[in-house]
Length: 158
Image 1 (cartoon, helix red, strand yellow):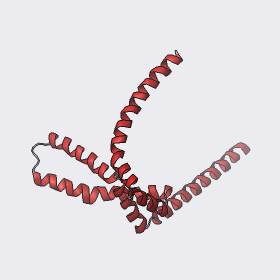
Image 2 (cartoon, rainbow, N blue to C red; image 1 turned 90 degrees about the vertical axis):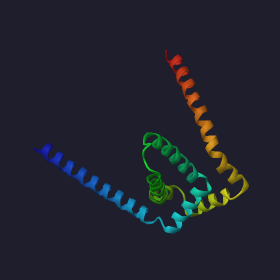
Image 3 (cartoon, rainbow, N blue to C red; image 1 turned 45 degrees about the horizontal axis):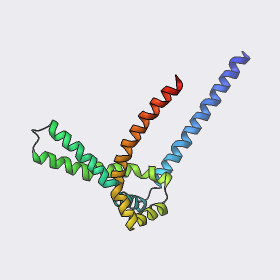
Image 4 (cartoon, rainbow, N blue to C red; image 1 turned 45 degrees about the vertical axis):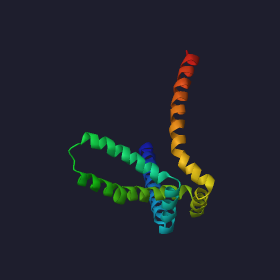
């Protein structure tokens, strides 16, 4: 009887604590989401633009559209124009809006402003321009490195 009572008390205590912790998490999350101001979102949008991130996103979307066009050759030009409008005026702004709280938890408004200032320098503009190429070449090197490492580890573990 005493064990059952202790178990029930421990279960209730654990349940109450889990509810309180979950409630605090959601309260904190909502506060963080509410604190992303329009000034912060505007700075984030500018940083994404000047860093070349927006161009990279649009380039990947264009690759997707090219694949879709080959899969749907009978779609009219007007429909593809609607797709373009949806991407640029709805989907991309939605993505940037959803990214704002993520950036907000890691970077202050001042951080974004400093990054924007950097991307307006000669070095920053060059970095933004070259980043996609560096990423592409680095990805190939990283893949080869991963294969080589896996082979070496297999040899070492035999």
